[in-house]
Amino acid sequence: MPARVTTHRHRFGVSAFGPRDGGSDDRQVRTPDTGSLRPKFGRSSRLSKVAFWVMSIWLTASAVGCNLLRRSEGTVLLACEPTQWVIAPGGQAEGRCEVRSALGFQGDVRLQCAAPLGVTCRLQPSHVTVSRHQAVLIRLVVGVGIDRSPGEASLRIEAFPEDRSAVQQELRLFVAETAFTLECTPTSLVVVRGHGGFIQCFIGFFNNYKSPVYLACEGLPPGVVCNVPAQVIPREDWGERGGEVFSATLNVAPTARVGDYAFWVRAYNGPIQRRADIELRVRTGSFSLQCGSLSSEANCRVTTCQLTSHDYEGLVEIRITCLGYGCGSCRYDQCFAEPTSVGLTPGGSASIGVRLCPGTYGAELCARGGFLTQCVTLPGT
Image (cartoon, rainbow, N blue to C red; front, side, top):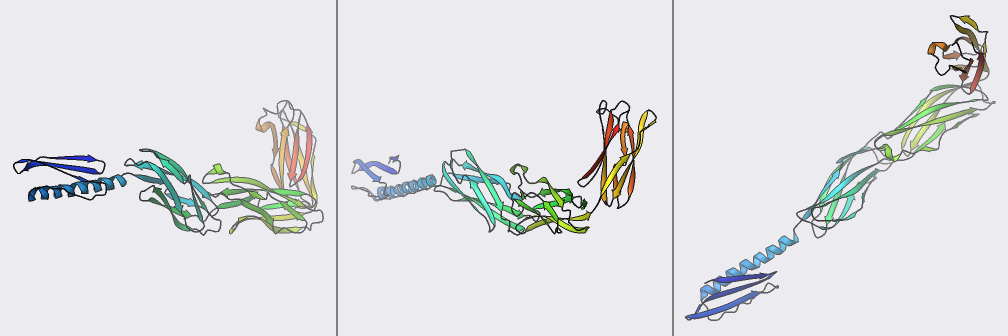
């Protein structure tokens, strides 16, 4: 008995043709969307009834299967990088997540990030629309609070495609101990009363630290003032590490007591603190610089200068600058002063040898200690 089956979305029709009492027999049964079966038989054989029920059950199961397949069709793939993060307390780092259509999925996807206490996690944007066989990139920003203790933690990124099961990925986070460092030079400084001095400091940032660092001078003796920037803020384009140079300027009052003191520069933010210890030696007095007459020696002009301390103690730097024609091309041995630095003690002195190149219009010799500077101009050759 031949049979004809027609399918219209979820409606199925079955027609059976066979002889009925020696004639033709035409029976048709339809399964509506409700899935109920209402067979109508005339005078048919038991075999025809069994065949109809088997066919009806098979078609109904097929319809349900197709409907379930259609509802579960497609999903998304989630891939975030980096999969491991190293961030110091007070730091912040950026990565990205890719949401890609799989098995022909298209539609809206909602994203969220689960982070432990003291850690922030942002996905920008948090809602996207994914086209079939396409991918969308999402910015991932992870921050660690300044009070978060060092250690290991985890982040969970979840994607929720509409009418589908969630997809997730675990990321590892290492909260580092080192956020920033501080170094200052010189570590020992001599300043004459009524004058000043300065030190240069370098603060280095590590492990994606991105929060401000506050600065202060502490432990200063009476009559001494120290000025530093209020804060240093890491630049966003430094990435994992970077650094900044700043100066600490000291002013010593004329009434400050002579003596040796210890103070420090402190860099801090919350529980994270770094300090650089400085020795300050407050002295009274000054120094003087005097040069003798120039004399000839092997086509050059030479002389000796005397640096004398008047109750001054500390390091004095010596610099010579050629003046006039030829100074830009003078060789090292044509405009020369030695030594280039002298350590003076109260009542002490030091000799400085000077040689000038032929053809110059003279030279300027300067001695500098702290904010004290003495210069002498020497005539040309």
